[in-house]
Image (cartoon, rainbow, N blue to C red):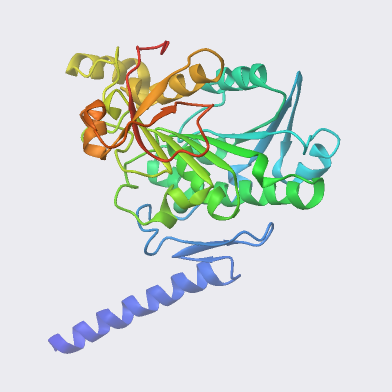
Length: 351
Ligand SMILES: [Ca+2]
């Protein structure tokens, strides 16, 4: 009897799984472990290994509603992903540098660092600036959903840039993709699909659910010719960033963990939780944006090369006897440098 009952139960579960697979897989759109996108043909996104760090399916493109802003001088235009080439054709300058900005999880486009970065880039030189609006996929309660959506956003941005190359004469050597927090890993997905991409700047890449994952899941040094990473909130317990080496150049300002002027007391965290909502205690995490933006036109900061990441964490790189190399920090880094670097800065502003 017992064996019969068990067999019956197994049979019922098998039927249930079959019915679920039929429901989700009937149009070949997606099954429970992956979602596929045909238009544009960016492929399928599985939540099985190694992508089981965020085991939720990404949203549809309709729901994410990806748009782009193109800034050039005083001209700014917003367009949907499927209007990219017709909108960009009369405006895009393929002979100039193009900076692509990718915000992170739960970041609205009004977040203070975004307009500041655009303003400073415009001041620096004449260039195309493209801001990726993925708020339909980014403003979600579940961090895992943001990670999953971010992979699709990376593929979409890569597709967009590829269209610019094929139709408007863009050159990957002139592309600089800049991300913040989870947006840094989206930059990684962009670069992984665009061999030859010149540069990625990652402003405190997220560590949670990314630390310990293989390179295809996260930002890594092979995602662009130059991958410069600014670590400002790598503390293990309450940090939003990561201490992991992810770039060709990894900067650890002030040890890469707790930043000057950012309080880590329980009271400060509680205050930020009450007044800052889910963005609590992000002072050190957002410091990477302040440092990078300040480096564009205002601060000239120099970093010391470290022999190991442990030296960078403990800010003892000046004791390194073999490597006395120095490197400019931020926007104007030396493109021929690589390694681990440490620097000390003021609070905000950083100089
Ligand atoms: Ca990668």
